Amino acid sequence: MIEIGKPENPKVLIVDDEVEVLNSLADLLRKDFHVFATADVNESLKLLASHHIFSMVIADQRMPVLTGAELLAKAARTSPDTARVLLTGYADLEVVIDAVNQGQIVQYITKPWDGVKLVKILKPIAERYQLIQENRQLIQQLAQLNQTVSDSEAQMETLAEAHSTLESDNLTLKAAYDQLDQSFWHLRKIQEVLPICMECGKVKTTDTSWEDVVSYLKKNTRFLSHGYCPECAEQVLRQYKKA
Image 1: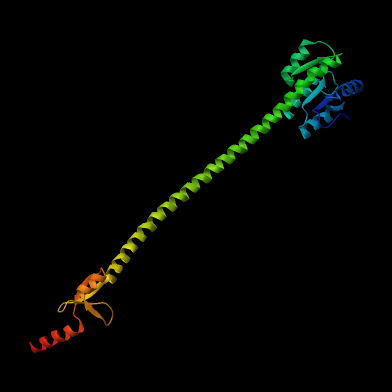
Image 2: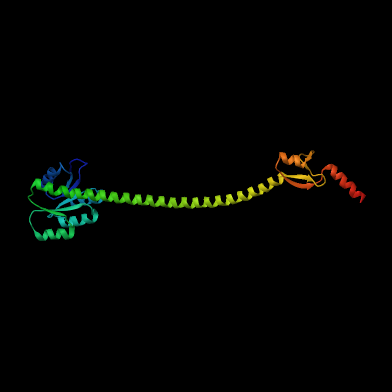
């Protein structure tokens, strides 16, 4: 296993049973990529299955355990977002078609390659993976935002229901208050009523004091009720006894 390049760069997995090819590609791509290179097909599959971090996997077509097309087909199932590139030593149309059908490759490269052109070809492919990941993150964030909005709407509905309940309670309380206030109004009016003697016309101003009604009304505005002052009450009682 070869691991070379800056960790913050896009990660590329190279699989080739020729060590010289691995070393050459790793050295060529180390500046622009974080390169993992291996001649072991099984190791490459484990890396793809366990990490899901590779923007691209480059596989040679002619390998003893699996062909490049077969390996890329497995990679498509294991890590579908990872771009797949076939490396072939000859321009064999049938091989390329097979790789497209099985491995869903996005690019094929023939040996020998031009280093400058190869890097130019691979950079946009790696950027595509980055865009896919960013898009997935945005979709997740949007889903979370939608959930937050949904939760907020539910909370608003709950608050609206609570507000409606409070308004109903307030109306009930106001009606009860108005009824109570009306009762107190009657009590206050009863308290304002003054007893008046039906004989002499004097009004009771205190518990022991009776005053001429005309002079009292000049000083106050009050309601009157009927009754007898003590002197008149005695006279009425004497007349009643005589009768």
